[in-house]
Length: 235
Length: 235
DNA sequence: TGTACATCAGTGAACGCGCGTTCACTGATGTAC
DNA sequence: TGTACATCAGTGAACGCGCGTTCACTGATGTAC
Image (cartoon, rainbow over the protein chains, first blue to last red):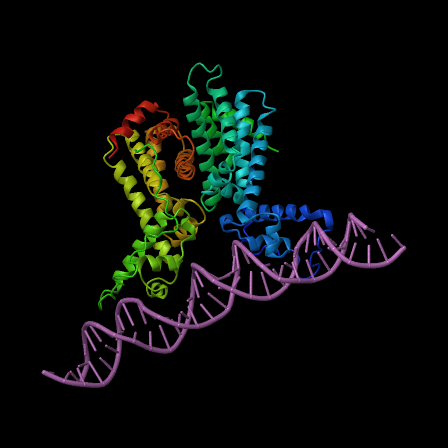
């Protein structure tokens, strides 16, 4: 993981997609869903880029695509629906990355380390998306409210993964305590990502060192073992 | 700590301070600073109450006090300066509460437990303020940027407090590792407050149980000891 | 003791802006006869 | 093979709103002479 890079600030300049030249051609007949995909891409890009993603506007998305604001209504009832769609995609992406990071794991510790590392790396790599998903009121209304429940899936997998390390044969503790331990691990990961993203000016140690200590505390394993697994799991 | 109470939602109804009756009397001659104090109080109340405190507007503050929007400019150059002032007060309040919670502590463990409990209780008691202080970009610009540095004070005290438990005679570890451990404790506390405030719909265990486990992990002490200290430290 | 003046603590109207949303429309393309 | 029509994929102008900020002003109160 790189020591610390500025998260591509550029708040107020959406890069002016096509200023005056090439004023976007209307899609041909059966291709209405092309704009839909472009709107999703543009909203995703803006949510990832803006450092206050909650203030994304419908007109910003329209400008980014190069389309009239009214055109969005042909594809989404309002901006909320578009953002909700993007968040669902991001959520699925994160859950998939975590599962993929865990799948090749040769043992339970590597599994939980893989999941945690995937979570933290995704979070610090896309601060805007992370903030939109987990930073405030949005997720409750958009994700859980949409009867999707990827949040509980993600957390459930983490709980199981942690329990497999701390209580391999599930005899030492109760499901309630496993849940509580997994929840606590999640809050720790969230706190790390969230403060790291928001307070870049502080003197942060390398993220992998913090992550190794963090996982070490929650699993009861030596941080050195975790560090080795983290290093082997880097791209 | 109470099991879980709704954080006084009421987003769009600032309680209509004085609808038509009693239209606020101008302050007498030397009392110009009275409005200043009222503006600070109103901004503090709104920041604490709104569940998206970052979208506070100058006109909302003016309405809350019952004053013309332009009147604010006599006391603050803009809304940012007013918010900055409020945040500084809240920050000092939090730091003071943490110190007070630690002061009567008979031993290092009670000291760190007192500090953590004060932090978490303040955070879940005033979600809006917590979010404004620690939830995003604001603190960096407003607090640290204002050459105040209460953030580092708060964190520094926590680092020292934790080190007094894990390394009483400061021989087992280095200042760098103490710093890293304290920082990790802070991120854990932040993650707990932040997710608890933002995801009230999840099945949360009692906050004190989570806090006891959390401090237990970071100090290496039994959670039962922490629980006892937490219970004795309640109001 | 009276009075002109200065100052204080705001007010009220106006500005220009970006916003979400609506509505009638437009022009290209496919399809029925 | 031609032509009227339907549909698709948007457009462009307008609306009303709340916002930050400005500017000339107002009315009460203190102060100098």
